[in-house]
Image (cartoon, rainbow, N blue to C red):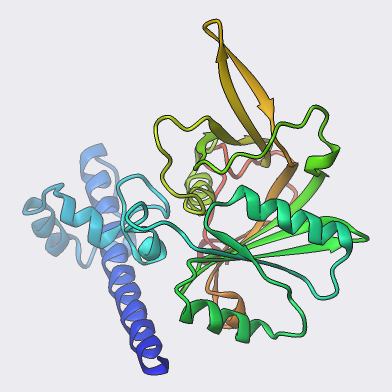
Length: 312
């Protein structure tokens, strides 16, 4: 098992290196092509290789293999790269999810973990106990778990949600607020075990699509006649979670809230798993103390996302 994991990890790193190489070359070609089309001076870094790159551009086409090898922004509709390697065959096999909490959880956090287990189909809840994170991740990999979810609390109120996709990542960190559990929802409808239909609203940027993919692939493909709906609505970078069932009454649709309710705010995405975060690359991180942070919307504006390498 250890040899297999080491081999798969080496293959993943090799693919990522090759894709980074092709991505850099393609970026130079795009800059040169834009300079030629708009009749503007060629960038100084491209002048030495401008003729060689121009010859390569003439023989290129926009075939599907180009997008698959080079890839675009992470989480795009038609891109396949190393970051989305584990999501490539989503829908073929249902996800398998493990949910746990921080150490010594309160009774409310245990109750909330049980409610999350009902939200995600094919999920199991595990008591944290005294297990180390490396032991939990290793056990999940050995049992073909696709996603590992950890819930943290502050004074009995759930405050943080971590979604770790296995076996390589990514790991998304969300701040949780305004949590209302199922038993606190007025006129609560009974829980349905049908696979839910998903609604994602206002996820427009590359980071928004990446976040939507991380949340979307926690759920299996629903049937057409499913009457269960889960909504992730983005407003000012706060993702509102709502859970409903519906029925038709005299050609009208009546919504019944199932619960729970909460809001999520993404603050970091790492290209690794929880057992090796120190060695993982940072794909994106929230910088709330920048002068322009109040004006920027990272999930719903086109200019809201920068990679960690571009920031540095």
